[in-house]
Image 1: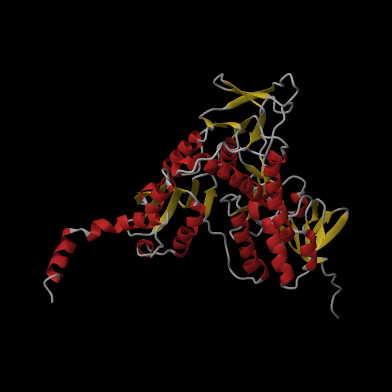
Image 2: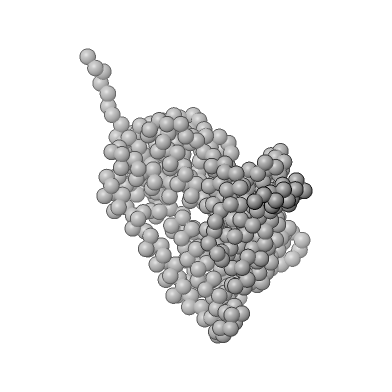
Length: 485
């Protein structure tokens, strides 16, 4: 006689309806599994509502303003652009609204997913509670994402501050936006607001774009300075105080450790992100976590509860740390599809991971930087080609940019850095090369349309082979061959 067995309520419970969670819920339901998707905030998560989409929409407006100011270089004279902040905000919110149906509750209910709009927390190794309801599961996928770090700065409590979740809600442009942090979010918002007519000061304890190649960061620094952004590098914020003007508007003073004081109207915190672990009660679920996120193996399975998996910003696979990018969330979802559902081998590999700072010019990095490669013990050759020396750049008046390749002596690409307009659009080629371990000769021999900025990459790769082609031995061979009929 078969023993009694109560099946779980769901095959898969997903906590978090951001990019990673939505992907997992969609393919799980598509394969006929019973799925619950739990989300306490907005469907679409950070990327749609507070990150990728609104920031790129704001940057698009800022780039348009900059293009109008610089049109005189081509013989086109335009008046100083007038910024209609209400219309600009409508554009940003319109971009979100246009994409929102793809991530909507209605769409996922139509797939057969049970959507629960509430906070979730574990009550057992195979059970969560959400909205007063307890749900058992075969598999639980934690995709709760990350949030902006709020540093412990004296005076910050009484002084209003912004993060990426609130800056797009401003009904009026900031008079003087002070940004704490010179990483991708800080620099994108700095350039966007500067081009839209705001005063902007960036305070960075180290150097801007600290994770990126210093040589490429130098070019980005010059571009930001040209746009009027004030950059205070190697500067530490000691405290902030309130300084409200007579008319009652917002105001603050940033006090640096070296005694300098910067007065502004708004403060944006952009010093990094932290996983959303609070409230999940991971101990009750037997799930191990560190300050960096849910501890998983290289295949994103919890190290302490085999029923639980983690994806996206909240996952810390094999101790290598989270990667807070939407495209990583998609990569993670693919790994789960293979490993969790089909029981096939799959694991995280960031060797060919691209990351992009969407300033103008954009700064893209794929694979290892020069410093990272040398620290890892690789013997490397560095190849460079200035983007400004391509014919397309000359035609468009582009004066800033560089392609920098990190290559082994045998011609294997370890990393590529690009500073150029639309550098992110070039990143895929390098990601493919590194991921598939294609030889550098594949890029050197690639036939590209003319004229394009991407020719800089091909020219850089060609420089690896030029010395060999011009060697005395090759010249002697060519001299002998020319005698043949």
